[in-house]
Amino acid sequence: MKAVVNVYLKEGVLDPQGKAAHHALESMNFKGVQDVRIGKQIIIKLETNDRDEAESEVKEMCETLLANTVIEDYTIEIV
Amino acid sequence: MRVAILRFPGTNCEFDTQYSFEKLGHSVELIWHKEEPLPSDTDLVVVPGGFSYGDYLRSGSIARFSPVMKAVIAYAKQGGRVLGICNGFQILTEAGLLPGALKRNNNLHFISKIQHLKVVNSDNTFLNQCDDGEVLSIPIAHADGNYYIDDEKLSEMEENGQVLLRYSDVNGERVVVNGSVTSIAGVCNKQKNVFGLMPHPERALENILGSIDGIKMLKGFDS
Image 1: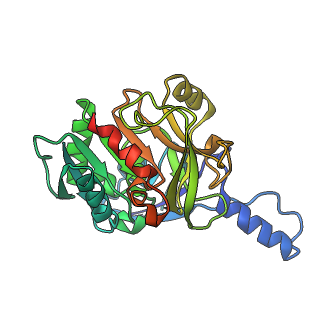
Image 2: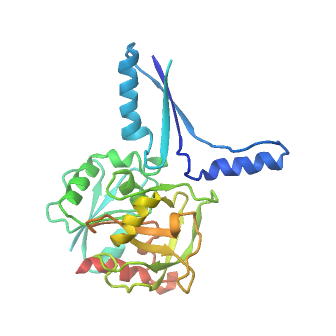
């Protein structure tokens, strides 16, 4: 199975890259952009076919390495 | 004093740091990241600057799991003195030895220049040769130096005297350099044995290179 992990800065933590992209979009006349947040996507191939096992293992990976929970949140999708 | 300076793949300030401590009369051992334990008579561990593991994932996030870091974490927990400079600061926050985290600079630029710093708290091993309020001049060179800590933890740190240095102008007034919360440039842990800063004191030892204020900082560990 595969796990798709999205890591992004927490709500309330200023995202300088998102802000720069937001300004760029505005300067290109894209109207109505309220906010831009930039994160990263990590795709992990796993041996297991057990969804619960996959999810708990990837959660541990996020907590230890893939995200810095001082500044980042993450989501896990098992596909 | 015996100083252990760590080397990871991508570290590039280890020789400047070695030169600095040798100039101050100390003996230095460079420690490859796969080595452990630390030499038993280590008086200070320095995690120097650079780009450990290419800054992949997040600056310092991979180096933090190197074998030598297990030894450094144990050493710090026993009260051993640890100093992280630039990438070393990032590694120590990732390892949980220092509070907070270092994000991308708010202007997204790699900033490299000589910067004024105000000493916020000198009541610690690291800055005891400086005075509170003193303004130092030290080079900075980083892309991820934007220090973040939430409000609640920041006030705890301020109460405990853990905020050590802030970016300032020549008069000691705060300036925004990289977006750090309240312009923080350096901090320590609650027990005051682990120190981290983005500026490079090891690059400020010779007048011909613009400043000798780094001597004052590194000399703190003599006592």
